[in-house]
Image (cartoon, rainbow, N blue to C red; front, side, top):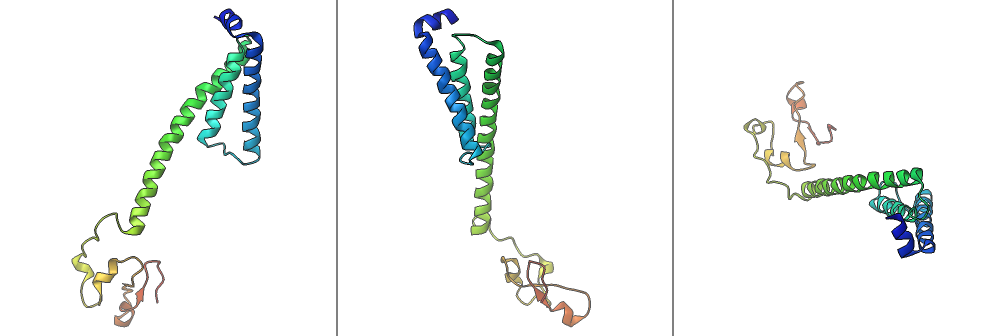
Length: 157
């Protein structure tokens, strides 16, 4: 098979393919070092797979087992890395959509107010469930302290 590639494609073409793989590796590493790319990006792993494939093809001219194993490793590790990042990207997008729905009020209807939330110590029980609305806090130190209002952030006022 290797002889077929050498005669069909030509030794010079295989060398050029290997040099293109090298240039791809160098470009990716430079972009990573200069923070143009992140090591966690899908583009980085696609580039590594592409470069490894080019170098692996060029090894058909002058086979080197160690170089072939290294390039095979880059390909074998790059594919699952891309799949994992695509899965994480999808789950991150779902989580972001859920957070957006919560903040815009599209997540679910307002829950019913429990009976213990109503009574004389909660003058406006319906506002208790609104985000950022004043909440009555009972401190157990007498009637005036029980009527003090605070906010959901935990501050009492």
